[in-house]
Amino acid sequence: MQAARLHEYTDDMTEGLAIDEVDRPHATGASDVIVEVEGAGWCQTDNHIIEGMWEEYVPQELPMTLGHENAGTVVETGEDVTLVSEGDPVICHPVQTCGTCRPCRLGETMYCENSAFNGLTVDGGFAEYLHTSERSVIPLPSGVEPIDIAPHADAGITAYHAAKKAVAELSPGDHAVVIGVGGLGHIGLQCLNAMSAARITAVDLKESALSLAESYGADHVVNPDEADVREELDGITDGNGAAQVLDFVGEDVTTGYAPDITAAGGDHHIIGYGGHIHEPAQALVNGEFSFVGNIVGRYAELQELVALVEQGDVDLHTSRYDLGEINTVAEKLEHGEIDGRAVITP
Image (tube, rainbow, N blue to C red):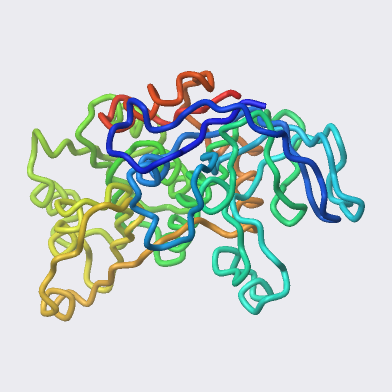
């Protein structure tokens, strides 16, 4: 089968991945599931993996097939698999878990002590077929197509994971801010809108992203190139700040907004990454706000997100590309030329 493989780390996205001919995976374990990939979302994390940013955090044996946002049709299962059968459409949580360690017993999918992460530590879905496990697949409801939902396997549940935490701290009339209405942000905004009665302000440099935000329920939009974000938020919130800020950019400039736009006792959620947090300890003490880190959501949260999709509460803004266009997608994303989410169709 064909697969898009990373052979060496590079900053040059024009030739980051190579299309190789590799052996197709088969179900050799009792709980194995083999999925014919119909859609695989491209993520900013894929660019970071190509650059080598994850090398010091997780073991990576190259060459490796990237792609951690996968959905498709089951074509083969191990002898103990009962959740799905051949022919079933599924979305795949990116992490394959053991089910027996303490984090697994607590439902903390991302902290499994024996996990394998498709496209990050083991081969992923930028290929015709994907090897995963019964513990990682979720059957799709009727009417939900794999190619249309694939990016929810990471982008969706990461955004939902952060929004769910924020919603727990939002009361009707509170203000929430979404910084960056891109591949994750446009999903997070919809989740906030569907699950809370907060007033939402979207911040983005692209007018197309701000228009998308308004179509998904944002009450206010701010372009930092045209207005001072701090002053605008001060006016919008009557000087009180936003109870919850979801930062899908995570650059120095956006984390730097926190002391001035976050309400006392509020949270600035870091979802996007690449920058740093440089704030005096006194700023946190004075405002009593918190920086909150967010990683990929749990398996159960992916189930909940699929329910929101089925109900029509969350939509995906996507564009599709063939496997052979993989490096074109990487370069476009690097230059901010993709609205919403790019989906590879192997």
